[in-house]
Image (tube, rainbow, N blue to C red):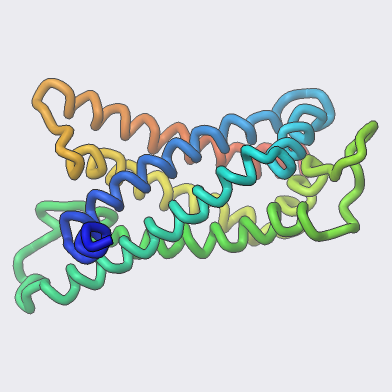
Length: 228
């Protein structure tokens, strides 16, 4: 296990792990968004409820959840380690070197953006995953023997309006987090070429725009349909 210890403690090894876990979480976002878009299917929530039931009961999903939690935990831990390392090794006169002229605020403050996303994620998991799994007052979906996640999503976004606002703010931070992290992940893994890098940059920008907007349309559309 000596190689693992060296990887987890070296700056380069941590950056590689950060990149791999980041790309893994990006793939999860794509799957998660695809399933969530079933909310917009005009069937009274039948397809979305079936999807939610499958995701909460299928054995393969249970195994994937463990990997996902480990991926999140490792990504967060390495991010914290790298942020602490950068703070310790940053020269005192860094503030006079005009870092804003060479990088964006978000690229210099990935830890801040990541922390906001983490706070949102904890609340998000409680509002949906925890309540769906353990709260018994959630009604059953029509014609089924499983809980109505479609109903729960609408209740949360409408009654807990502050969470809807936090959701939208988190999506903004997620977008900036992705636009920097997507390209950085490929660069860290050595995938950098004058022919392919521009495509990776454009793909990362597209992903960082489409995915957060896709998630943000859910609370926005639910609010509009309910109040207007």
